[in-house]
Length: 241
Ligand SMILES: [Zn+2]
Image (cartoon, rainbow, N blue to C red; front, side, top):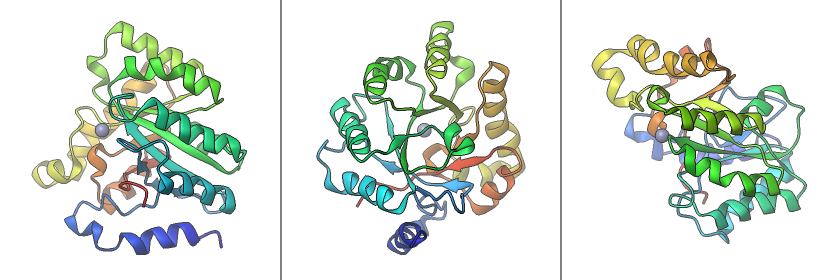
């Protein structure tokens, strides 16, 4: 029964991965009994707060005692406050925790949702904190172009980190693996795009455990190679259906 959500997702996704970058390959579920190192995440950008498919995925996670993953951008422009509130509210009603990637790494095992926000919009993330706090939610922020962050943006990121949210890596320049690797090679992508984006966060006092592929673009070879460097890689899985 435990493999049901992942198997069903994989079967439903066959055909979507044919674009060559495998961005739909990894299911957006995390099972504690057989923890995957590569996960996907459902997009909640632009979804209505009452989106039935989104809410059903949370019910399924409760039923299977798994974690279902979601991600969005730049609230409230990419994803509305109402939708974030509805997602976290549904989880809370079912007794599910909203877990950061650090908590996927550490446990303890429990059913939950794992919500992340990607890219650079620290002010928007910081403004979200009252909603997150009201739900007792821990989320993850996948940061790209950290070298360009201002002192003020870095301070806000540290404040979020102090409130038990995860600060995770999302590339030096948000370069897409499916464009970069054919041109410069896998090793160059890892050495210049991935690893420095993890290291700059470690150097600034964060403890990243995950890397999210920019644009979701990745290959199996990239995931295999990154397993030596970071506990989890996160792709994208389209909208909940
Ligand atoms: Zn991104």
